[in-house]
Amino acid sequence: MVSHSPFAALNFGEDNSLKKLKSFEEGNRLDIWCIRGIPKSEIARCMKYLTDDEKKRSERFLIPELSEQFVFIRAFQKNLFSAYLNCDVSELSLHLDSDGKPRLFLHGSEALRFNLTHSGNFFCIAVSKKYDIGVDIEHLNRKTDFSSIIKRYYSAKEYCEWLKLPDESKREAFFRSWTRKEAYLKGIGIGLRGLNTVEVSFDTAIDRKVAEDLQNPAEADCWNFHEFCLLPAVIGNCAIRSTNDVISMNLIHRDFSN
Image 1: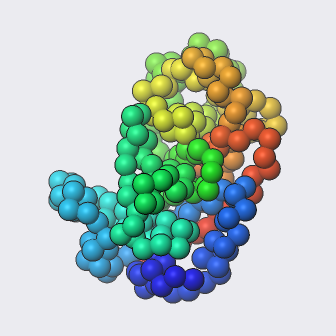
Image 2: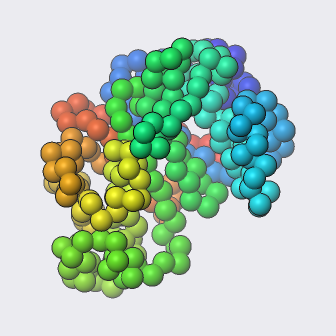
């Protein structure tokens, strides 16, 4: 394996996770890297992987912890992608498409599909060889006025379903629906500005249609949803644009919180 893997470059140590990247060429894999905390002792070393524009962006954060998070995750991403593609970090470039969705390029051609999300000190990077993807995570214990959000941003149909739920189920059901909704919207590239254009199920079951796209009904039929938990109190959903392929989802955990 190349020496500029995220583990070698940032001194994380070798394990079996990167060895598994060799099978990524099969294509029908969805890898979700789940990261908890950041190694603050590595921040200075991470800076060398950032472009001048990214360094300037890191300096604009008013809260030092947010700046450190940005620096580490950007460096981690680049080294991770270089390991997948067996190339040097300098050969990669990140660009935003017309909808503002980040795209990864190697020598001018789109190389991987990926999406990033974070909540508190948890970060997730979803990576696919050929499928468009979107991912979102949320803390279940986050203070949120569920009813106000659903009444304002969800459809009348969703609001009626919400009212039928038992009170003890509403917190988890809300965050399940929110992560599904945001993952899909990030996947198609329009983000939260499309909150009221898609309807999702509050149900735990995913053996039926989970999302309805009110503006483009045929599009939602092309997406599958994969739910995962980082902790009992942290829920996530990944939306992947694949109709008939069987997708193998792999959760890869890294804990830098200690």
